[in-house]
Image (tube, rainbow, N blue to C red):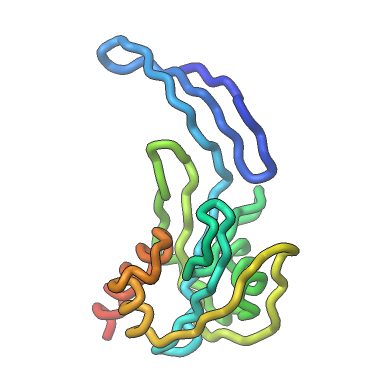
Length: 173
């Protein structure tokens, strides 16, 4: 396998990768290299979750999402989850538990996202990065599920995280 670095940015890089396939052919792919990320399900109480309205330049719209952010290597995912939760929502978690990890788009991207549930929240005040256009949206769990089903929530990590956690909640109810 050979690699050629095509682009380096502050958050990711792009490599062109040549790889021999089992049938002897060479396949070339552009791959986005990413340090990984976290997303957090902030449970305000047993039946309310804090989502966010987040303006995304890439799609030129405000999306409803779970708070999330990029790892700052060598930062461990649990520390990134603590940091991002405070930065984006103003809540600090009394308890943080990793639920799952997944690849967002492995056809082009090696980013692994770590999904956490945050409970025993305390409001300490948001520390948003300059230029971020984020607002908290606290809703009941049933309203969050309705928003997924009605397609109001279109962000993949949020859909996956909420539906997975809903399933886990039902098992432990």
